[in-house]
Image (tube, rainbow, N blue to C red; front, side, top):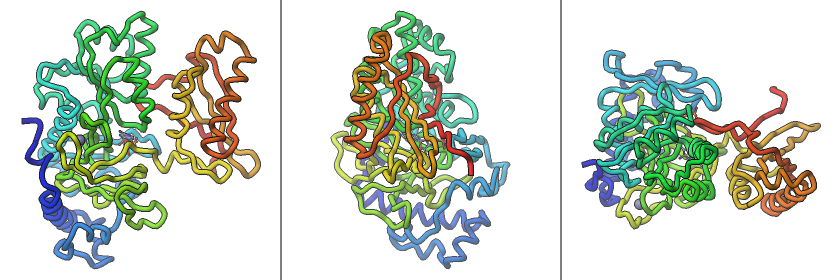
Length: 433
Ligand code: ADP
Ligand code: ZN
């Protein structure tokens, strides 16, 4: 049964008991097999048996992306290659990629996590599922593929790109569910509109979108323009890819697969734990992975954790929609800005399309931000005066929200490069140090 009620609705105390047991097993596993972890644990003098409660996880050393890069490609692997059956690599959004090896058991777990995700999104056996996440090294394509197969649905492995063909397939195959990044979903809607196809009238019912930050406003935009329910998936290569956390029908935060992942949120500066309900950097420890387990991996993703009863019946801890990555945080005139704040605002402005980039430049010692956003055709056609009026209106709203002046430039329709995977929201034109 893909919906693992026994686990997903387990009483919290029982999940936590299971987590503690698995945490100790994982620490013992890496201590014996990964010199990097042995050294780190020896330095602070902690062994698996010293972990008496889940809170003790805070005493363990954190792992950061650079640790994976330093040990590239297989230095953190805890099993011999003869037990590895798959190797993925991160998309390298923020630099040199990192690897993710899997044992056969790791693959099973991953399939289970993905199946839970798709089931919770309402995807069922008789559905035809078009998988437009990129196939290949990226965990999205093959990860979702496996989940769909586990649900015994028909998977159509279109991978990303060839957008016109995606639309044709969607029409011809009568696709019920679409899997892609949210930005690619938007690219598809636009292309369909250009082709004279109204996706709202097709049998498409639901999408499962993830792999990049997107706002609730963007979710609504996609739901309206496609006439579907837009559900969410969250994960990262270091933790085995998508399937770490998923949306349920309540669409109010993502349930974390707690039997496989132990989540914490910490202050990114001090690494002190922050209480439930407060924002900070998300940290995960994998609890049952064997090829390359992660102890306290710092995701750089900013969110909040919530423990509450959900209408869906699941007891798994919830994380809010990711607010942004610390890597993408801009500091403009002393104010911290995440692209998601600007995205939410732009989506409320009827004169522009939800296609934007943030350009950061250095002027003197200070960073300056220009928001480039596409004008709707009729605004562009109305000429420069109208554009200037809209620019002024948006920068006024931005000033109200952020407290600082930000330049806004309307650009002509279709000028901003469309995404087929992860959208690039920031163009950094500051000189490299
Ligand atoms: P890369 O770091 O190269 O992009 P991954 O493909 O492993 O490599 O991407 C993982 C990252 O993608 C996460 O740490 C997070 O920043 C982002 N991500 C994945 N799913 C979501 C989501 N649902 N919402 C926001 N961000 C997400
Ligand atoms: Zn729920």
